[in-house]
Structure formats: C-alpha cells, structure tokens
Length: 448
Image: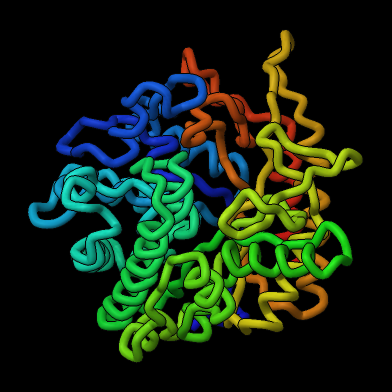
C-alpha cells in the first residue's frame, strides 16, 4: 500500500494510440482504433493515428523533453496489440522491447513510470470475436495483464488497470463515437460489467505476483449539478450521476451497481443482473488508489428526449475550452471531497487534467497559451487546498506532455504543454510548459 513518506508525483500523461504511431510496424497488429480511423467519417478532420506523434521512433527525444520539463512522473499506456498482436497467445518481443527501453530510459532520468494497461486500443482480433461484449475478452485481458506484470512489474512505480471504462462502454457501444462504433445500450451495460470483471482479475493477478507498487484504476468523473432547485431537475441530475459516476464507483468500492440505476434501467426495458457474490468480491477487492480524470462538470435538467430523461445545460456566462467543456476548477476539489466522504479511497491521484485551446506558433517561434496557464493554476490551487485540508491526494498529471491525436477529434484539438508541428513532428515547448516546470520545481522543493 502507498506510504505517505513516498514522493508526491508531479507528472504528465499520454496514451499509446495517441502518440506512438508505427501502427503496423515491428509485429504490431491492428487495434480497434486502427480499424475505426481507417473508416471514412469516423474522425472529425479525417486524420488517423498511423503516425500520430511518432513517439515509437522518437522515444528518447520525448524522454529528454520530460527531463527538460522537470516532472518526476510520466503516465503512459501499453499498446495491447503491440505486445500481443492477436490479443492473446504469441508474444511480440519487439513490442515488449520498446517498452523495456522506455522504462529503462525513464529510470535513467529518475522519472517514475506510471503505466496504464488498457487505454482503449483493444486488439482488432478480439473485436472480431465480439470484443468486450464477449466474456472471453475478460480472460484475454487476464493473459495480457499477466504478461505485462511479469515482464515489467519490477520497473513500474504505479499501475492503472483501465482508463475511463465508462467511455469504453458507453461512448464506444451506446453513442457510437468511439470504436467499435456500436449504438446499443444493452451492449454498453454488458461491456461495463466485463470491464469491471477484467479489472478485478488484473488486480488479483497483480497481488499474486507479489508486486509491492500501488495498483488502481482511472475513472472520468465529474460533479453533477441540477440546473434548478426543481425536484425534476434534481432527480435528473442524480440519475446522470448514477450513469456517469456511480455506475463504476459503486461496484469498485461497494461491490454492487447502484440500485436506483438498476431500477431505472429495468423500467426502461434494460434489465441488468445484479453482481453475483463472486463477481462482487472480485470487483471490489481493495485497490491502492483511485485515479480521477477531471476536465469539467455537468449541469443537468429534466429532459424527455433521452433514456435518462435528462439533458445538459450550457451556461452563457462561463468560459469553455476548445472541446466545449466548461472551465470549472472548483469541481476538482468538490470531487476529491465527495469521493473521500462517499467511498474513502486509500489514496487519490489526479491522473488527467488539461485544457484544449487552438494554440498558434507565432512568427517569433513562441506559443503563448496564457489561457492554459490560467486553467492549470486555478485547478492546482483547488488541488493544493484539498491537500492542505488533509485529503489523500498523492499525485497530479497534466494531459498532456504534447499535442497528439485526440481520438475522434483527430488533430483538431491541442492539449499539450509542447506544441507539435504535425508536418515536421517537431516538439516546441509552449509557455505553459515553462510555467509548469517552474511550478513543479517549486512544489518538489516545498514537499521534500
């Protein structure tokens, strides 16, 4: 379990598909994202992650960038089809070697490695047999987790089983905006169950390997506020909280899906079997931390057009990022307080927090992203206050170290502290890069 004596992690985060490129090199096979982006109409700007930021070939340059930034932690994910091209079975040693070299280079530069097992790039071979709706994928994930733990377990400082399983289940299988592009609510509910089970199996395998580093999961979480004090708006907001937040939090920390959501879905014709005793024990076994990916809040009112009978409200007097997300820094501390009070995780890491803005490389070679600096400073103020109040926050990761392939938005959204010229792939630190470097240096000195 994590000790308070250990170093606080100030870092940045990435994901394999978004930066690596080399989509079909050195034995890597196709992922569901490779298939999805090669289908016209699925990505806003028509681009693909075939090259992305070419991190696969520029890894040493990127670790040098991390060193220049001065962070003490780097969160990245392993591409499942790069190490197990068919999802299970034969290991691709060239893929394993890439991550071995990355881990060695991080260690050489005194940067903690924070590794996510699954950041959305399911091997297409598994999708061809049903993907996450097929319970066999749970067992494939066990095999994959065992491989990764056995090869890298001694060199990783923090493990994350899944990144944002809600997105995998509902954006990929109900909204259809991510692969596999399905639009079936019953399938999304089934997938959510299998993802939770795969998490539980991975944690069990991890404990069996007797690894001493922390393991947890990263969820996309948001405060949900009713638009008004009307009873119908409050009820709609609570339902949305059950849909977005409690649907994964409750099984992980309480061993069962939220009863109000089981009742609501059954009412709508989607009967979900409650977790059986063995499933409950597996999913809710203790984890060492909860990862929070925080970007915005949701304001919800009663609506009649959705399955939840709720709809989001956009306020006219608030600032919004380039992704259309409200800038609401207070929500970060609100989440930390609520999660500690309701679920009591042993530790909390802010595993993603960031701001998309249409940054411009100016004639003098600088990228003046003042709005990102304000965004980060406001959120870090809320984080600091939560820590001063005794809440168990152990680390913070900016999304992202560099601009990258932002899923179905392609290259149209820039979140990075470093600007990427997508023609030359040159990385150019933005003003926020230097601001965060100074912040990390100051904080590391204070907290030593």
